[in-house]
Amino acid sequence: MMYLDQRPVADYRMEAVDDGVILHHGDGPDRCDENGAREAVLFEEEGVYHLFYDGCGSDGWLACLATSTDLKHWKKHGPILDYGLPGEMDHATATSPWVYKEGATWHMFYVGSPLATPPPDRIPMMPYLTMKACATSLAGPWMKQPGVVPFRTKPGTHYSDTASPGHIIRYGGEYLQFFSAQVIEGNRVRRSIGLARTQDLNGAWSIDPEPIVPLEEQIENSSVYYEPANETWFLFTNHIGLDEQGGEYTDAIWVYWSSDPTVWNPAHKAVVLDGRNCSWSKVCIGLATVLQVGDRLAMVYDAPGGTSASHMNRDIGLAWLALPLVPPK
Image (cartoon, rainbow, N blue to C red; front, side, top):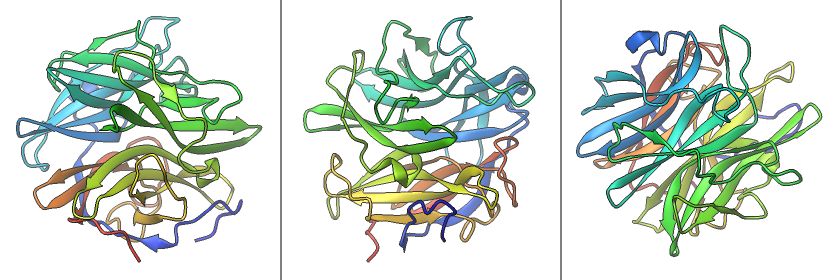
């Protein structure tokens, strides 16, 4: 595939096997996801899968929770976060949470924004900022920590217009967070994954001066898996493509691989899921999260289905990759 602006393409494929839709929008408590479900983030605690997803209700988008023991049958619990007060950075949305457990505490890093499009869609708008909350269990209750500012956008950097949370790992005596970074230049947006570091999950994070791959890669969001069989790190991410009129949308899930999670080669990437191997959405594929389940890697993602590229009325799908993961040759 080639794009109108010649943005890079992935030369390899490492195809997932799609299982189709596992969670439909529209029937969440208090109509919390009546207009869509997207940004699926999957974790497990004591044999229970916790699926955090952004649900769009009448007032906008909030992080919601569904739980399952088999990844097929889900119980929806409704929103786990609420909107901030007027003037606060999460007044328009509190969504897309990533969590990490340290001791008895679950630390949550979620997307906040003071801006959204007009009703009824109310899609969160940039700046996308990283906010903090905590809980003693994945199901909550989650307590916001407005006094903790992990990191913010910074003019003149690769994260000047977006610095939103991503996957967190422990490596080399510190925590690493692979966050979404964006720069707006006129009518053009460039995107990549930034790398943030800290030794205190309730403290500030330092940001590496360059993203893990160039902004021209046009990727956002991250989910990381370490394959012990070949000591390789795999980073799953959303690729942003272009339609024939030049409009941008999420067109595929890509994976990058590296032996060192702090050093990545932009040539080492492959397509994992797109319209070619997705069974129900042939144009648009949204954010993906991976989690080992037995001898396979489960990958949840969102999509609008058919030939739509809309942010609205999306559902959550599931695909699988066989383990051990092996980089394509």
